Amino acid sequence: MNLASLGCLPLLLLPLACSTVDSSTHQDPAPHPEAAPQDHDDPFAQAQAVDAAQRDALLNAVKALEGRWTSEGGDTLFEITSAGSVVRETMMPGQEMEMVNMYSLDGNALRMTHYCGGGNQPHMVATQVDGKDIVFAANGVSDLKDSDQVYMGSMTLRLVDEDKLEQHWFSHTPDGVSGPMVFAYTRVD
Image 1: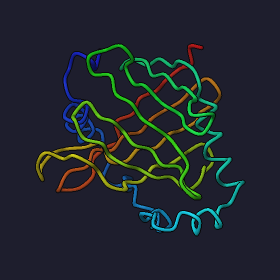
Image 2: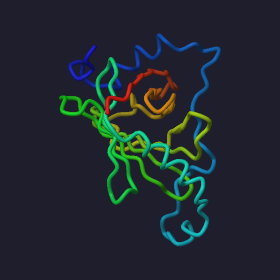
Image 3: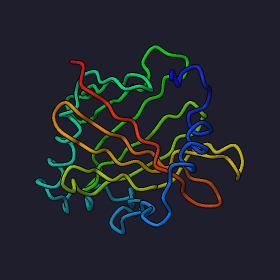
Image 4: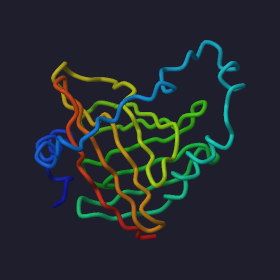
């Protein structure tokens, strides 16, 4: 199935995700207490409290994904940019529904913004690599058109091995969280 021809990813994923959720085992990705929006009035106060090992683990895990990956739903491309401080993921590159995820450090957290084909920009945050998982919890969304709009508010990156990657996306609505919709990628190069 080529997602590029199906329209808005969030609207596609919600019904599919709802049908695949086992409510007895589903846990909503909750925001991390440390992931509250930072007070950017004093950036030097934040810079003094960083844990270099924690930061390196987070960013290096995403940097290790550099290259092209393929799945049944389409390709994704990870590129390191901004002098090694940012990772840009292009989902479905060159397709009509191309979308971008930007990963960057902020204090001891790795922030991700999903520039969605639905026209909104969910913001997510992860504070650690937990085994093979990096759990990005919801941390806001920009440019929702109305209060009922669906958006992809949280995501887990599962680093299965150096050539296998899964993304578990969760749809957010006023009624709650649905998912996951899983994309299983294989490294191409």
